[in-house]
Length: 475
Image (cartoon, rainbow, N blue to C red; front, side, top):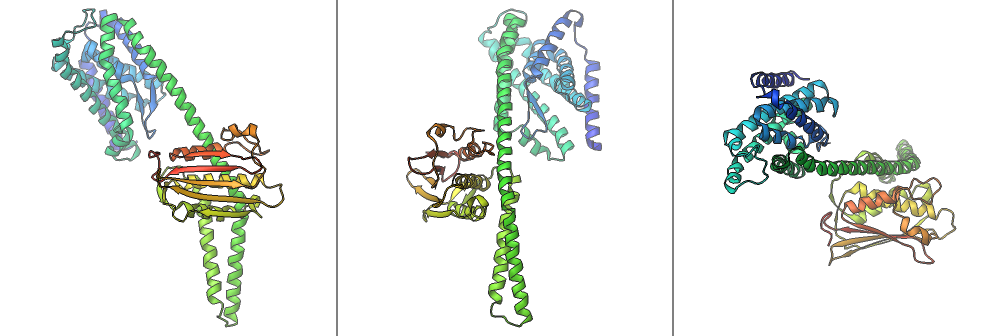
């Protein structure tokens, strides 16, 4: 921990302790059952947490319960309940380190007290009909609560985000403003915050109308929906990781098969260098240009292949305006020396007017590698002809490009057609079954489509369709 971060955490803790020591909850002897009940409610809400966009912070729905406490019981009692429940939740629910838990509870106590004070200062405590047992407000009372509630939410939001962002910034050597933008001030997070804050008045009304059963009726469906969403997102993350691992495995397998190709290229460069050296010793310079060109071409090809082999580590999604025909031909140049594609004839019918397409090059290249290698596998045991036909075309009306990869293999059995893109489905003895499902996911991520046909008496035909302008513009 840096000196400035240590000083900041210490100062925040001292300010919170000073507030707590000088502001004891009023009438605690009679209100303590309510305090315990709301601590439990806040703890339950603290279990509804997710990681922030960068993973450096956590986000929970505890603000709904914490701000409701501030409105219902005032800034002092609200400060104690919110701070204590945050400390317990951070230590025993989210398992955070003691320093981080104490800072979080301290800043929550401070922001709750300041937000509650703003609410009370603007007349919110006076206008709120606590203890009346009614769930409806007359129009005058409702209107007078608008400004105090807005102040409550704004003060809480600004202080909480600013204080936490500063701690994250100093603990991770990131710019404070970038932390705000990346972890909190992005649209999806702001929508969740707005939804949480708008639930505060509803929770207050539910409690004033029915009491604790009202809180249960309010929170139980929200809790169940959150847990369901959380399980779904956990499952999706696990699925994405499996697909990513499968993509790495497939590319790694091909890389191992292409390793010998690097040696072949080195052999060619070595041979050209030896010829060049021999001619220089003999003072014969007629073939100097051709020898040096062979060396330059060989090193260029090796560099391109090495860059491609290293590219499997990259997981980002960055669209580039790409010559799709060029990508297809370069991919063929990479894979044609693989043992599964030796002796295969290539028939290319590429539209010379094909426009450039917005692509994540590595992902789309992986798709074609998968299709080409699969085609080589299915034709491995057959005699000639062994041919892969690649066709590209452009539909100006819909701004869609199509690439068809067809092989001269035995085709796909009818009972397997519907299973081709399912994860873990494979007809290979040593296959993992993630190749085509990963390819489909990559194309769909680009806003495209991928289909397969196998007409009787011919091989498989895979059609890849991509919007020229990238995701989100499929017509």
